[in-house]
Image (cartoon, rainbow, N blue to C red; front, side, top):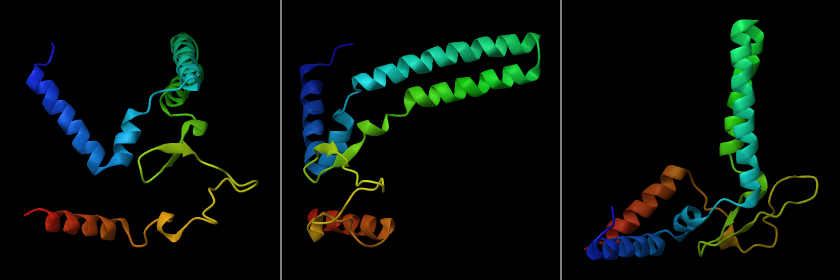
Length: 141
């Protein structure tokens, strides 16, 4: 069902408002799947098919073959749905993403040399949430 011109305009305005209010979230929603994710999806589908075959064989033979097939199905679905680690990146303040750089031997991203404002805000999640809530309430008349 096609949207009317007014509905399309309202949808575009809502998208612009979302991007203006929270560019990080909007950037994450716009990201698509890469070619590596297609391979993972195909591998997951093949794994589910093999696991289903093992479950059917396990019904006719022993319980353990069926259990192994079920475990293969669960692992294959997880493989297909979870994004590859290399596809994850760091979302910048302007909403763009760039791949996370890793230090040798550590596996953590480095904060060395970054300005203080780029580091995570101190305080708990709820403190930051309440602060943002108060700021929004002050902005509204």
